[in-house]
Length: 150
Image 1: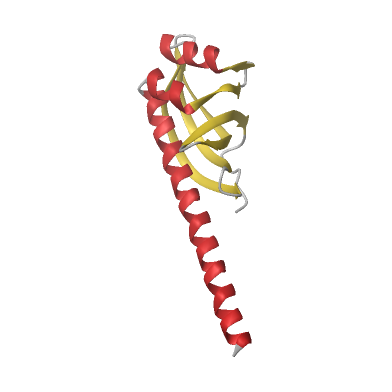
Image 2: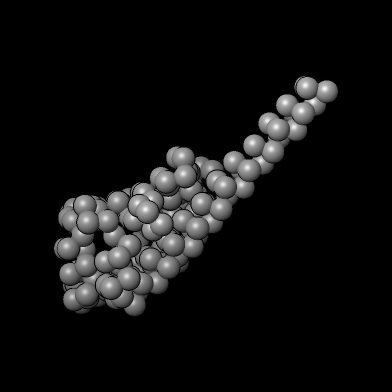
């Protein structure tokens, strides 16, 4: 009888942990999707709230911090017109840290021209109080056949 009760207890804990992880993964996926839209809309107010004050951004042309990224978006120096997301994977670490990988085709307006590039974008998130903060966003140039291992 004790073994049965213990087995049921372990099963409930496992199901609860799985559901919590799945909920965080869905929340991070939705937040990333919103981020792409805010970038396309040049909504620096929403992005300023999402980006951690110490966040870093790694692009093909360089790396910089939050203030520079917001300036680039606001001025249209890089206009993230559309991120066509082909695949998304999320890994959680506890209930306050998540890494998301997007495989995207990015259409951007850069230096007067519309360009399209294939990227895998890595996003690191950390929960502070009740809000998720983006710590890092890194663009890695890839072929269109690149796949994210799930």
